[in-house]
Amino acid sequence: MAYNYTMITIKEVKTSSDIKQFVLFPWRIYKNDRNWVPPLIKDQCNFFNPEKNPYYHHSKVLLLMAYRDGEPAGRLSVHENTLHVKKYKEQTGFFGFFESIDDGEVTKALFDYGKGWLKKLGYGKIRGPANFSINGEYSLLVKGFDSPPVIMMTYNPWYYERLLLNYGFETSQEMYAYQMYTETGLPADIIAKADAAEKNHPEFKVRKMRKSELEQEAKIVNTIYNQAWDENWGAVPFTDREIMALARELKTILDEDIAYIGEVNGQPIGFSLSIPDANQALKVANGKLFPFGLIKMLLKKKHINGIRVLVMGVLKPFRHNDYDKVFYKKTYEEGHKKGYLYAEGSLINESNAPMRRVLEKLGAKIYKTYRMYDIKI
Image (cartoon, rainbow, N blue to C red; front, side, top):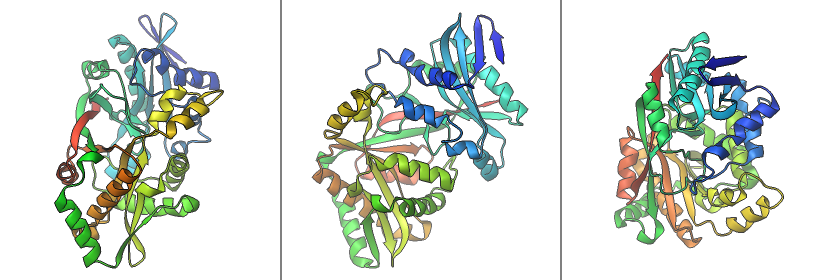
């Protein structure tokens, strides 16, 4: 099925060759952008394979390509998220993987087609960008284009915000990436509170995550995550299949020295997951592991000097005991020892005032701003 919009044609992505073109399109947009980090082409193709991506087990997805005068000009995914609908009782659909030349007509054609598809499914609003879920890569970069994104963070041209706003999208949530450098150290009061928490609560122990017990660790993380983040804006639970897929994806880069599970009398009550900024290695591979991409990645991996604090949380009944300060202290001490120079904490919702206060007390500063957008169908 094709949809003609003046000189623009919209085509649904269905075949393996269509998917390959969808995956490769960003190379046209970012060919002269030194801060873009190319994804691994094979991984991206697998992501859009319903047999390999567990997201397809619970939600429908439509991929679209736009052509102007026969040449690829844009792409878009529109998709439902049945977990979001079930939790929030609202008929919200989502968009993601938006890439486009600087052309408002291309944007309009893509979203008009996508809106029509979602409307037929009964949805009255679209939110995004989300690739595919808020548990994956999501949001649009609007400030902080002067450096590459860290692992599992989005990056886009500055003009994408203009294209979305001109189409009629409105901001639904602003989000921040915080950065801090190990050379500045942790504030004395944070260290003191961490030490006091360990001394006053001997029943609380922190251990490193174990790659050798990946499946069991992933189940623990999922149980805590789905409870501790339940009140966060837009939060939806991981399914068992999704958390296992993410665990397998992260296993190759997981640094056990900066990934922890906290236990009280042997029962998990919190965790802190930081990962090396593998984007530093991915950047030199240019999307390919072979013939020389893998060698380049392995050489660069030895020189990764930053981390992303991906997620950290403690179950509600235990939050008043300063257990989170223990996670901060251990992450800093181990990270500094291993030669990591900086850490990014992301993404932090504008509405998450408690987490923002903690990061500011740690000395972290906002250095990138992201946004999510909504539009009525």
